[in-house]
Length: 309
Image (tube, rainbow, N blue to C red; front, top):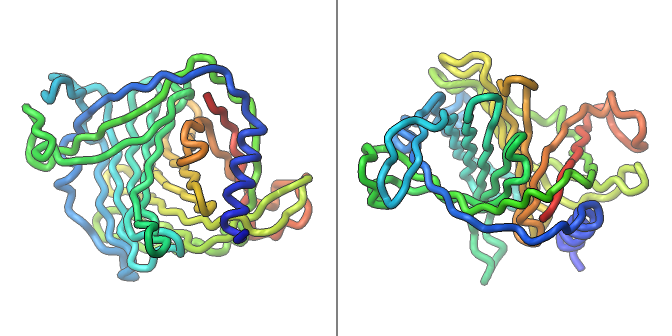
């Protein structure tokens, strides 16, 4: 068995063992339109490796029966990174959409292209989304299309339709914790400016190691991450998408600031065997972690607190 495959199986076993199965989830579909998201002009980073599309405070409206419902239900930050040198196992495109619903409530949708695994294993766009309290039991997938292609009446040129396919399970509780180590992540971050848009930060090819019995062990996955900060016109805004390739499944989490009250929030989701995972991810510099042996100062400790329906 390959190391990547065994890593994926280990993650499935770990997360399933940590969370309780508390009843059947209920599936549902919701569509919204984001004004102007697909008309955002791209910018290129100073190092020439990232093309960025970025929009903040974009109005979001509900779509019902292929028609835009008048009124704004949220504002969105829409980010797309195109990486000329993506991490092994990933493709060049990553997307993050942060929906701010008011009252500190956020829905964070992340997606990333995976690399082809060879004959019979095509590249795909994997997506997840999760939310902050009181919607923290939401989990599911999403897709993106132009309003014109979807035939949505009342939408404008360049508007994007996001279709959420989600599960709800009011009985979910945050009943499990898992930790991993992103080896050397703190020393691996590359930063570059995109004139007129933002500063981008990128992590590529970061090994993710298991932590059995509070001891750093072998590699079970690979991490990549994209972030924007110092956003033009919105200097306090920060948004980041992190994806971990465990071989047969992907763990995605999006971090966004500001979330008021509470500062930064990092809802987490996953694909395939644990596609219904919902919860939150915590990141801690190794220097502040005292109960794990084998850490290096440049390591980042990841802590998943989550549940499955």
